[in-house]
Structures are given as structure tokens and as C-alpha cells.
Length: 532
Image (cartoon, rainbow, N blue to C red):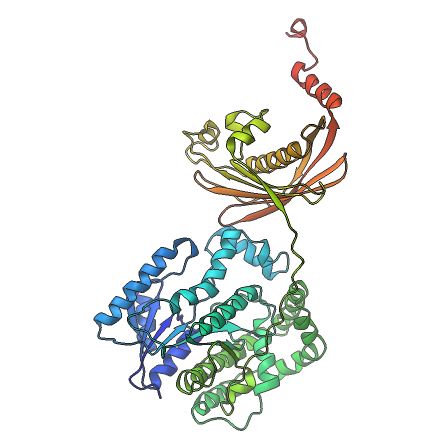
């Protein structure tokens, strides 16, 4: 039992695993404290009262850009606990997930990922950095915080995912598990629990979560006869609710062919696009047969059992039984939810194959050097502040990085007029910035060779990185040169929340042709006598 123990649950939400673990700890006699993004919200206060957890009135939001504020909040939480008479924390539970800023461009990118149109690594660097921090790095900050209330006997528990569905932020959970291993080597008593698929506020956005929950129930839970005493009431409630669900047998008959012939192939391939298409088609069929609401109801019932049974197992086997070694990942599957066996150690993750690193040399250019090279641009139309580019080697595949901080209307009159009263560095200006990066790179490469690059076109089909003054834009470009008339810069430009990919096309002309072409623009083919 954890009677008279103090446990801190970080990140618990209604309908999530954190709430179930907190409730299980309370039923075992622990004093449980919780944190919230918005502890002043009456709905949050009501939720924590409902699960028997004392809410700490210090907002805690993990944010990689405001990490000093995170550490300050953790210090204030420690002070609050000590003021309430807590002398030691016996366990700290990390249930934090997500980390995606609530910005339209970010939500669109997430939607595209779930549809298989892009991957997590196509997102803006700042977004990915925050997701890594929230899902993984925040656990390290939690372990290293509150030194006055923790010691070598304090247990730390974090949650991860090891299920069958393609999980587009799986790399961040791998990072979390690495942090747990590192902390264990430093003497911290911690364990990571890989919990099974269930319908939660977070997982509901994952394509196919309903099908995964129902499949796992049918293949691993349905028909179980040996249930532990502490889980038996939950089991009885689930079975009774499912028995009352009209149309369940017809749903099972409809889904069996799909599970037998398609499901394992789809989830085994990690093909998000194929999964999305199959799920969309199947859900359409279920709606036509009035079975989709039956599936949703069944999944809601099963998920309630899965969350609460997992909470009991985490408390009983990990926090009370300590049946793990520091740094372990212990995986709970549906068949373990009967409660009659110990939680097994998860299989090692497959390590990603790493490409051989390329020994690169870099050149660094600040504003003055850029201004001298791109002297054809006036000060108000030069949209690069700094460039780092690869030195030497073949032209094809040469990479470069550019950075530009959007000026204020006082600093640049373009922003005064675009737009009046709402200055924004829009998509067309950002394409120009990328083109300037490519031009600068090629001029450096061609220096002294009497050759000049010219722009022939740009293609940025989804440029949505609108940037206000003060926003820093990052550009990355890779040169592809097949011949002098086929010059391409494969590039992306990003701000804090969005990344847009595209290409800049051009060609290389010799100096004589280039100057002749420029000369025709300068005179426009007219003399003063021709003007009207």
C-alpha cells in the first residue's frame, strides 16, 4: 500500500491515464497532489476534487522557449508543498504529452501528418523542439527539481507509448526513454510505463484509435476468466456495459474480415496514408450500416476500463511493488489488464539506422559581406542577415542556411505599407528571401568564374509562414545543378510555428550574355526621343 505517502501527479487531465493513476493512488491511501496549466479555472478545480487530488495553485506549462519560467514554477510548487506540511515526495508521476502550440499553421501541419501528407520532421524546428521538450525533456527537469522534497528513494514514473498504431511523435518518446536510462545511471529511481491504446483527449486525434482499441479487446481481453480482485469490479462494469450495447454482435461480424485480412498489414507497415484511407473507407461503411455509433460506444466503455485498470497496475506493480529496475520501460498490454501477472519489461526499440556523417567545412557571412555580394539590392529589399554555407566539394548537394529578422515599419518602409496598420512579411517577400539565399550561395560558388545565376521561377505551393516584425525566419537550401540551364534550390523557410517547402529555379549564364540581358532592361529599348 502507499498509505500515508505523498505523490505528485504532473499533467493529469480528465479522461486520461494521469487521472486514473491518481485515483488508484488515492484509493490505496496516498495523499495525491496535482498540477494544472490553469489551476484558477473552476472546471480544473472540480476535476481534481472529483479524482480526490489536491490541486496546487501554481500554473505549470512546459515550454522549451520559456524553460526558466518552468524551473521557477517547479520551485514555487516545492514551496507550496512544504508550506502545506509535506516533508517528502515519495513519488512523482509525469503524465505530460503534446507540446504543439495552438496555432492554425501548427494544427494544419498535424492534420496533414495524420493524413500521411507529411511527417513530423516537416514541421518547423521550433515546434519540434517544443514537442521533444514537453514529451521528454520535461521529465528530466522534473527529476532534477524540488531537491528539498526528494531523495534517492523518491520514485519517478513517466508514461510512453509502444502500441501498433503509427505514432508520429514516437521519436520524442524514444527520447523520454533515453532520459530515463540516463537518470538511472545517476542514481534516480525511475521507470517508464508503456501503456496500451485507449481513447483519451490526446489519442482521439490519431487515425484508427477506435479500431485499435476494439481489436485489442477482441484479441486479448474478450473471454478472460481469471481477473485479479482489485480489477474485478472494473471488469464487471465493462462487461455489463458492453452486454447492454445494442448492435455489438453485428459490429463484430462486420469488422472480423477487416481485422483478419487488412488490419495487421496496415499497422505493420507504418504507412499512415494507407491507414488513413482504409479507416476512412471503413468508417463510411459503418456509418451507412448504422454501426459507427456502436463502435464509438464500445470503445468508450473499453477505454474506461483500460485506463483505470492500467492505473491500478501502475500503482500496485510499480509504485508499491517496485517490480522494476531503475531506467526500465515496462509495457502493459491488454492481456496484462486482467491483473494476474507482473508487468513485463518492454522489448528494446529498434535503433534507427544512421547515415554516415559527412565531414563538412562551413563558411560564415554576416550582413556586411552579404550586402557586398548582393549589391544589386537596396537596403530595404535585402532580406538576409546571416548565411552559413558549405565550403568546397561538388556544387550539386551544397547546403546553406540563411536567417532574417523581420524589421519594424520604422526600420523598413516596406513593412509600413504591407500592410497599413498590420505589418506582415508575407509569402511573396519570403520567396524573395529564399531566392536571395540561393543567389548569394551561387555567387559565392561562381566567384571569379565570369558566370552569373539568374532566377527563372519559384514554386512554394503552401507558403503559410506569415511573419510580423521581430519574427526570425530561417531558410535552408540545397543546390541541385544538373547543367547550367537546370539550376534548382530545394529549400524551406520557417518561423516559430510553420515551415513551407518549395523550390527556386534558375540557370547560369556567362558574363557576356548576362550583361547583354541586363543592359536591355536598363534602357528598356527606348531613347528619350521615343518617349511621349
